[in-house]
Amino acid sequence: MSQPSPARVTIAPSLLAADFSRLADEARAVEAAGADWLHLDIMDGHFVPNISFGPGVLRALRPLTKLPFDVHLMIEPVDPYIHAFVEAGADHLSLHPEAGPHLHRSLQLIKSLGKSAGVVLNPATPPDAVEWALDLVDIILVMTVNPGFGGQAFLSSQLPKIAALRRMIDASGRRIALSVDGGIAPGTAGRVIAAGADTLVAGTAVFGRPDYAAAIAALRADAP
Image (cartoon, rainbow, N blue to C red; front, side, top):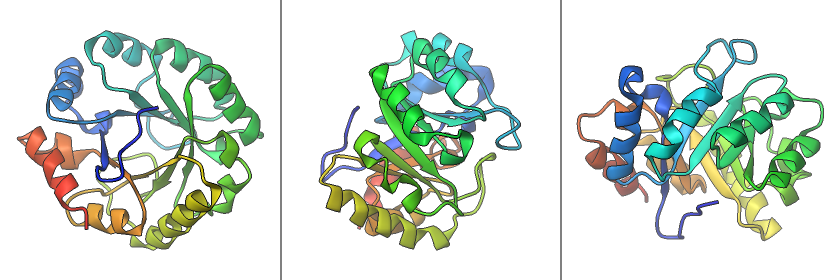
């Protein structure tokens, strides 16, 4: 997994906010603009109230960019689809504890396929949902909106959770990316970084701007 250096925040533009009629161009554009990862939100209309795209989109985009594919699986059940997304080109697969009966087994499956494994915490999901699986975790993604739709307002109630997870990660001694997704823009980016995050998933704050490079630079510049 591509990890951030201590002095540099990882930026993962979310393809959900891109122009769906130009996905190939959009992926190449954010790579040229300095993005670190490409974040792909996979929604099934069941676990979350929206439908986005599936493995076929990843497979089509994979030859077009060198960016790691940071795949957020908002699907239930999740285990039957892990192989398909790996085969389509995913580099990181993150899932919700609520999306299957055995989080530990799901993470083991991802790791056995040679990919980075992540756990996603919804706003009401406590930090201890991941505590006993840290030995298998490469990414913890904190949702600062309710999953399912882009463009929602940032939930400041999640800042103490980010801080608690930072303490948990540091105490573990493991190299785990602490990512945040939801309402990330200049202003909120600095707040989550100050709380302990090192990775920012941003949708409209990048794809909704006319200059992607300037938008990514603005997110990094918001770091305290």
